[in-house]
Length: 365
Image 1 (tube, rainbow, N blue to C red):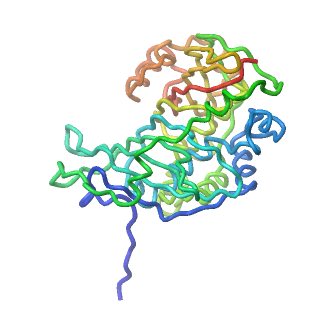
Image 2: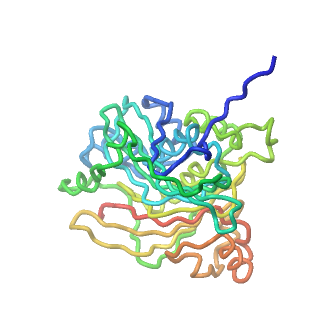
Image 3: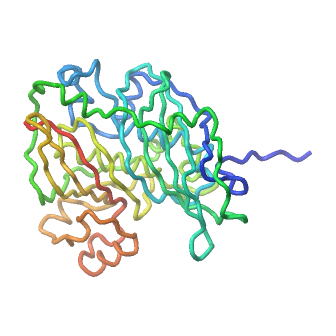
């Protein structure tokens, strides 16, 4: 007898624009989820560590970290969608849309927005929208994603799905913004903050890894079923790659001390430059692109952040001229970034893992 080998991920033979994929996962979170998350991704903003501060900001309880929700949105979609993906290219417009509470239950859905082969015809790029939904059928988190796949077999230009079914309603309306809730707060609780000014460049001091065991645990609990993140039998320990969502979350967590108090954030875009393996040490450098006053209580800070791997920030970057092009708000291809580093900043050659632009919301003081 011969066994049947199950195959997961997007079927390029039948996929077409407009199709909505439902994740098989449904997960209820409790306080242990936040504790486990913050054991790997340190939090410095009090809204996700202090009940007193969170209630002073108008919430009912300590906030669930937005990065945790982003990774649920990404990882829950791996089994039905990205388990057949070659590379994760980047994210856009990632944002939380509803308040999350302990005891909430989450599901995710993925819509195929655009798909087509590259000009060389040796691969395809698929654009998708990912939605996280709670037990009340509210959109909790959303993001756009670009993924790199094998070539789409003929016919490449396929008729769009005319009826995406009952789940299409999740993609018609955008949820509320948390900013609306925070604008109703008359006075935010006192908490440590640093002044941020346009064109400040911050060398974030912390450098820390995602360990081998941490990577396995995170991949398991967040249902990231792609074997390249955990199957050392197939890939060997040296071939395991840390999920891009975890890399991004650690980069942002490392910078949280210098940016606190972060109430909310919107990821404009992010993309990965060099892959990260378990035990690689992650650091970060950020440039403040702009600081704008929303009202008398809140400010919006737009930031470009580079995630670094295996760089001792204090010893290797203090006093070093970092090319302005690396820290502007323009998206750059990995090859362009590597060329800039080799020509103008060799210490960063092969060491940039992530580039990201986001806007954070903070109290004015």
